[in-house]
View (cartoon, helix red, strand yellow):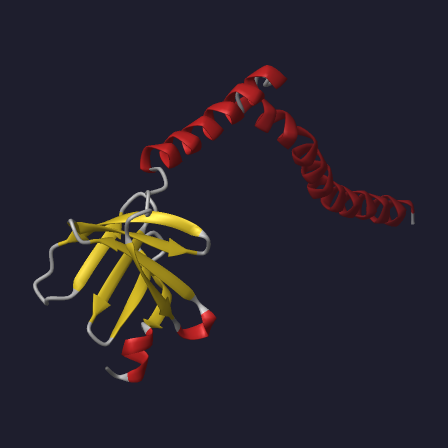
Amino acid sequence: MMSLNKLFTACALACIAAIAAPLASAAETAATAPAKAAAKAPAKKPVSKKAKAAGAAAAGAGAAAAAGAEGEPNVAEHKATDYACELGNKITIYSHADDSNSIALRWKNRLHRLTREATTTGAQRFENKLAGLIWIGIPAKGMLLDSKVNRQLANECKTSEQALGL
């Protein structure tokens, strides 16, 4: 009978060892994984408040320089043409008789200078590459596009004469 007890005990210990070994291995892996990851990752230097402020100032200066480079066009002696577009959008185009190569376009309370781009269709196409705006005018209507996100900003833009069919 003694040998049956020894056999039973040996089997019980073997089962416990079989169950405990994977658990111990998983616990060891979980404990050492962060240490291994920390050893592989390079140490980051803390960024000082002055460096953060300098970076933010440089980014702001870059944006201001980009806006200042374009500048808001002077439309004092220009002819204004108002367009009513679908969805209640409004656009005003300022043109000058002496300058057929550029227009000023008011969209969402901002004034942008757009320059003429050649077309093969006869449509009037003006673009501001910095702002990503494209104005396309045909005899029946006009549309404003955003080339940065490839979508229409305003469509079915018509002057009062175009709306009446004149």
